[in-house]
Image (cartoon, rainbow, N blue to C red; front, side):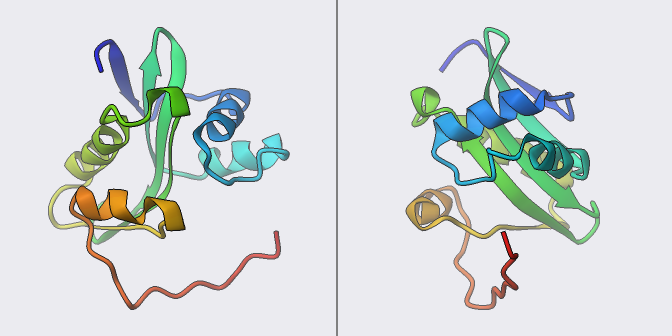
Length: 133
């Protein structure tokens, strides 16, 4: 898809993120704008995708830039899905962190095939401690 601009660590408006999350299908606490603000304020690597000055995609990560990078969110507006935007967001994260840093994520059930298609390997060693909300 043409006319897509990618920005790294560009300041994002929490209401734009909420709109994007809701239009992408990702499940996040969009009823709590302040929590969304804090989620992004405390992340150190964010790649966003823009079409005509509208936020249409975002990839949010936490990394030490030396050993591991946790990919916490990837969301693309449904109207722009299946055009390579999600793959490009992840490619830009990978390019930034380099080859010595592992990229780790927990997939939503419906996204597992996407991650395998773009080169991620399934792991049987993932553990989570569930949050209260």
